[in-house]
Image 1 (tube, rainbow, N blue to C red):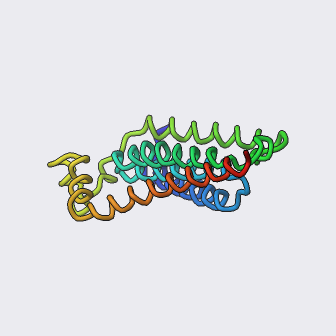
Image 2 (image 1 turned 90 degrees about the vertical axis):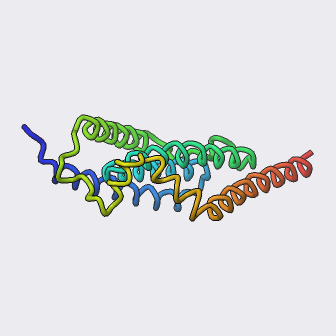
Image 3 (image 1 turned 30 degrees about the vertical axis):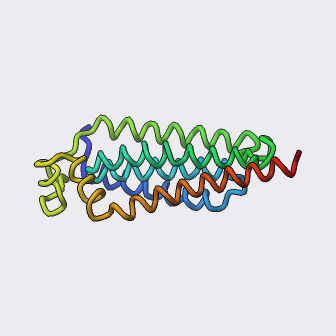
Length: 183
């Protein structure tokens, strides 16, 4: 049975959008910082899937590598450095039903990713030139994204990196101060 592409992409767009919103709400409502960080990773993966569905594969991969990968590792490093509690207190999923539900959601998302990977983008869904597709075809995806980032938005890019560095240094100082008071 052939896949009806507009319906296929519309369904997946709304699916990943709803999962991203639900994950973001769950991220904000968690008591455990580790569980909250993992829900944020799920949100980042859903956003990456939305970028891929919108034919922005480069931005989707950057979303996974930079945000879901590097930034979340830094966040978890800071949370672990602050030593916010015993591991038994960190777990949000207590009991059998939450674990079964998490496994089912994981399998469903794996099936979604496999279905998207096997499908081909029809010509009707390719972005018109006014959305930057012509620039991407002429200069490549990396140059199209990197040129404004390192020209018009260089100050914002550098300020963001300094803020992240200050947050890490602050977490180390708080962690050291807690060690001095404990010993």
